[in-house]
Length: 111
Image 1: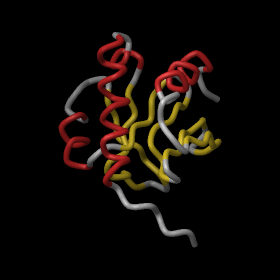
Image 2: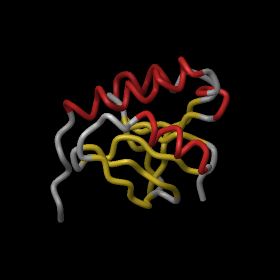
Image 3: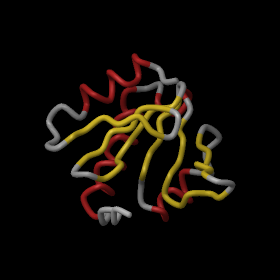
């Protein structure tokens, strides 16, 4: 499940990006940019894929938590609760962190 209002907010923000594809994954809806996971929504949280070093700093904030997958913490993937993106400037801060990292991260090799 995911918050449709939050999904629409991200859609509107990504409208100027090229090669954006929506994909259901991680129990929510993710946005692939240039064939790479960039940002997503699960419930009322934003899933951000950002630079792992920046993620460590963000995880010090009360409204951030790491993404766990298969019992392991996924480096560079964090969830932001509503408290962390409520203000428009904070929302855009996280979207921009995702887009910045998306430009430099390598595509995952398909199995």
